[in-house]
Length: 346
Ligand SMILES: Cc1cc2nc3c(=O)[nH]c(=O)nc-3n(C[C@H](O)[C@H](O)[C@H](O)COP(=O)(O)O)c2cc1C
Image (cartoon, rainbow, N blue to C red; front, side):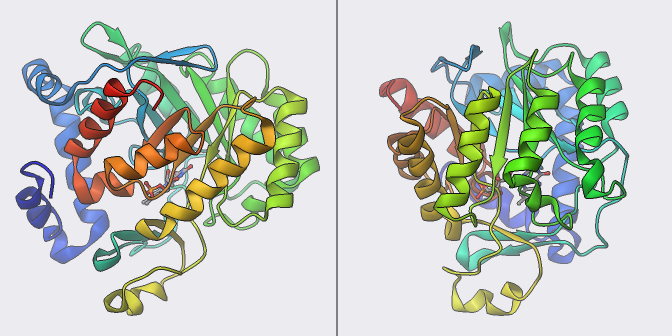
């Protein structure tokens, strides 16, 4: 275990009788309080801040380690994330209509596998509420250094698939003034039919509606075949997408420890260690297939600095963490960013 996070983790994992979402909510409440406390923010920044600047799709990043979508869907603790060392933050996934998501329990830790299964279902307060929060907050920064904000957009559950374009566009219009980049999430396994929006015609329609003013990235599933990924990339290149985020959670259940077998039966997307290799191979495929023309944000199963190093070697320009942050805490963010500072090609 890196740093003193082991003790905090044991306590966190006991919250709510071991209910993972209760621990998540508790953490967000604490970080929201920290976000309002300048002294606490400065103390965290002194401990975890690392500068390893990168310029990707025209945006300056103070370091290339980002918070993945889904951790702070409504942006309730935004100032805390840069203080914990993140060089960019992706909020959302947000939808045009506020929605409750799936019934609880819907988030499960598979501890021996260093994995998580979730079927949250885009629980979020909606694009208008996020826009209001971001307007009140102003630009994100770590001290005086600007920190890019990504906004992940999804389709509302009540919106039929054939009206998806208007739904994404409504969220984008509400939020376009607030994000440094936008992620088109067409890869969550927890909204029925959403992943079919990765098909050529559907994706083409969404991108032609959104591409223009701000960098638009497409987040893809790890379960796509290489020909299907190649098709996504063709559309991205033809429509002027700024990059690809690879990958979302998987519907696969390979690579789990025997002790986690009962939980493996839970429906939802799997993240963490079982995803490491697959996410990296998708990043590598995207990089090769486009000759590096489309910047890639590599995400999936990054649990130690070596995982991140291999992700950069596979062609990622930036990386993001979710499950690794749950299991290893902010010291992991710092360790990866320090490694990037020491080896600027990573
Ligand atoms: C509880 C949970 C909620 C998530 N919610 C979202 C989301 O709203 N939008 C999204 O694009 N990805 C979401 N993800 C996927 C992560 O952003 C990331 O792509 C995936 O978990 C793989 O990275 P990891 O192995 O570091 O967790 C979620 C993941 C988890 C574990």
